[in-house]
Length: 234
Image (spheres, one colour):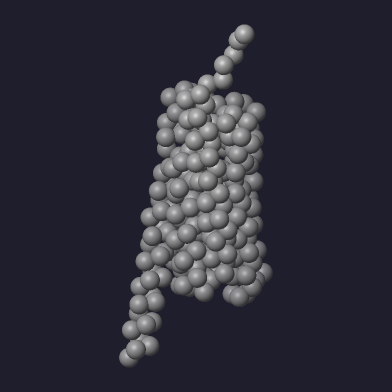
């Protein structure tokens, strides 16, 4: 009787963590909206990078496949959130391509086609050549790599933040959403005993913490510069 109750509580906790991860991920998917409103309003992508959306699109596709019952039974919440995420990222990529300069437009189109080809290859290889355990290992390993890349991709803008001493191009909402989502899925992965979920999301939690720390530091630095501007002149 006691073991049954513990098992039920354990299942409820794991599902709650998965649902929380879905909610925070949805917030993450919505977080670029202010950026894209600005892009549409100004008719230019300015100095914003399109790479985080490429990484996120690839990550969502691979993690969607990993969460499917054909690959990993029992973690459907991973599949649901990533199916929604893939749609959002595709929309963002399309908008970015429309407003980007021609060289960046061509680069983004090429990367989008490459991502689609990579995903199609992963699905084909995993279904055609691998049995169930090998398929989970293969797709799970790819999902770990893609998740780590997605969590690290916002750090590409850190050089610009340091150079300009401004957090204008590192949205706080994105960093917060990454931190909360990765933390929730880290807990979900631990409760599901799935290293392919908790390892990358544990790394994501650490990277999210780093992004928030950098945001706080440079935000405070910007405020100090406003209070005490450099005196120029004789």
